[in-house]
Length: 320
Length: 320
Image (cartoon, rainbow over all chains, first blue to last red; front, side, top):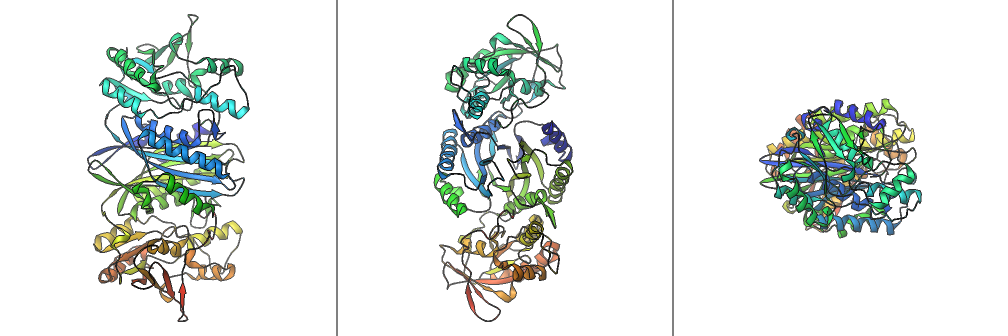
């Protein structure tokens, strides 16, 4: 609730055209260049989790926010708030992960800032990474979406949320779940190169697929119809959701892209995505429809029709 | 100590040419454009202090880091980490200050992120503001400095640090001290327009004038000789320093620029600076010298010569 309050509060106070677009990155013009600019603060708890840590996560998250806006991520800033007494070994591990993730994504950390606060004034370490990219594919936008468009996801849902949660709560499931946290810039660049008919891309982080798709259709002229049987969910996430009562549709991913594209290009895009290790699980999971205007519906595996609405609160705190 | 450790640690891990320059902003090339990019996290305690709050401070700090690199600040990001339960009135006050400071400096907040953490996991609110500017005056650099150059400061030292400290500790002095926190982009643009012989600019934030000047001369071919009698320190700051044993040379400013310029242009620059309300207290405080290579010396008011060395630790924590 606080989150939505703040959101509307800020949008009103800082009212401007670019911010209002509420996309993952702002696209701004400097001289002749279209530049994407984004920021994310990371407060994930625990700071080290199966498949990653707060450092690699921060790089991936910011790289992905730039990538889904059609930009090539180039430069990152690094802002750290560190609790006094954080042990050096942990700090070294996180720093090395930041460095390795930046190298793997082909981005440079060019500016930074470190603040150390007294014990008890912050929970171990918070990281802000802002990023700049050059927009190579301008105009990706919800306005381009047409009925019949395919809704594609680049892999299975919710691994990141479940990996963090299992570590935080000390729960283990039948199958180990590793975070899907990864930089998608190469994967996305491949898809954008293969098809000029990609309408819009998003990464389903906080609030997961359900929230992201609702943000896309809300107030718009179309709806989205999902097919539950086509939505990829791993065995481990499925077990964890059954055990804990979570819905995988609302679990955060940190290495998945949602791509909305013209139907005639969907097969080609899927083929290109699957060639990449990070897109091996890519699937068409639904269609943009004339009906259900502004809503997301899902045909369930048992043949029913379910409204996938905007969640009223955050399902899980401090997952990113 | 932790700070210097981290600093060397990060520089080694993220080794690249741009970061190594250790200037207030990174200057990067995107297409044909020279772009300045900077980040700062703010953890000031208390979050509201005489003359400003964490919100206005964050805007000023980032605007100034871009400005001293010869860039026109254009776009800011806003990353907030908020402690659950922070009262709405305080949050509204800070938000309004951010908005007002951005408007006054002519910059737009185009992207943002908010995280709320449980009570006790952060101290009220931490703010990261990253910024992008277009470089209009490229090449400002320590390499340009020559013996005989004038060292100019745009106003009196240490008001910010003393204002924050007095509020935090509940101390009052004979004279009220307000933070000097302000956006210097217009002031600096005026100086750069007036003289093509400005070599380098910096804003003396953490560690104050003493630290900043040491960073400029360390490892270089020249020294700096200051004149104590010319260094502007307000009555209130002087009293506070005498009472508490602080040295104004090491107190953080958030609305002052240090300008190193060719001697023949110094008077012209001072004249232009003084026309602006924020530069009214501008003074030439010293010279670049052949002797004292790599060191900062000060001729004291009593006629002695004092080494102004790099402080071994932070004089005051959580001042910005």
